[in-house]
Length: 335
Ligand SMILES: Cc1cc2nc3c(=O)[nH]c(=O)nc-3n(C[C@H](O)[C@H](O)[C@H](O)COP(=O)(O)OP(=O)(O)OC[C@H]3O[C@@H](n4cnc5c(N)ncnc54)[C@H](O)[C@@H]3O)c2cc1C
Image (tube, rainbow, N blue to C red; front, side):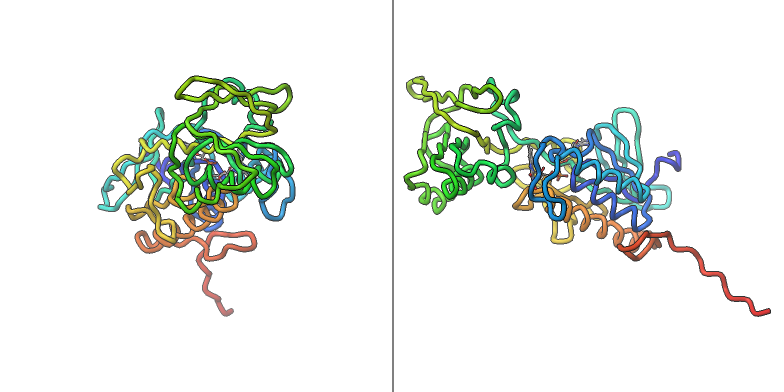
């Protein structure tokens, strides 16, 4: 293996979690590689971020480019590509290493930080893609406040969907909760709270089409029992039908929950020593930019500690100021 392809840590994913992990790892003088399919992940797909502390209102691409610039400033190597597998091996010195492979290159990491996020499941109906970000949203916590006083539809039957409908009932005059089944998967205590005059529960129904000129104006809903259709005037539609997770690249390597999210400890450790995980891909409850960033920082600091313990790694010990690698102090010579 080319020494150039060997890193103290390899981060998989260039969203909020991965880029923050990169900033922290590089500032501890770890030789850091970040492999990602894109820069910014989910956050880069929205024009309106209002809840990232300290920056007020910012577009996703702008915020995520700042993350990237900061990581590069501290020395992270960022390469674009899809990671196809992460496997563990024992090197010639009998030490644990991780091989991270894209379709063209293999890299070795003494530690790995998994931050490959997730994708919100789509309905795949006409109008959904075209009106994305213009009334079609996948995140009530993020975009909900923009719909104060408006009419909205929420799609789904789990905790996220019911939670979203309850949130909107506090700020919107009318909320349609559309669910394809006759029963909710959400906790009973939440479902009970749906009995409010502002909320209309539309069961056994699917969204057939989302319509609008510049923004969402209407959804076409079809009853799956009798195929009857109905048009509902709305200003926004929140699609809360779960996530798609691609866990193939780490199959059998770390423990996952039944939704294929990576199980982590309060220090971002996975079941495999040397592999940390951060952000939306993990079992954390809330999927938000600031939360992913926080977990990215935790994962990098824990990776540093792991390298100290397993390889006697001496980087730097500070997280403030401009970090410099430790250098041997020359003994003072008296003339
Ligand atoms: C439309 C939208 C609007 C949102 N608005 C807000 C908001 O206003 N405020 C807020 O706090 N949160 C918001 N969120 C949620 C927030 O964006 C996410 O919680 C957060 O960005 C997750 O960051 P992450 O780094 O954990 O994962 P992700 O952002 O999912 O990043 C994962 C990264 O991994 C890469 N990747 C995946 N697989 C591979 C692979 N095999 N090889 C290499 N790279 C890979 C991807 O390319 C991506 O760069 C929004 C989400 C969406 C979809």
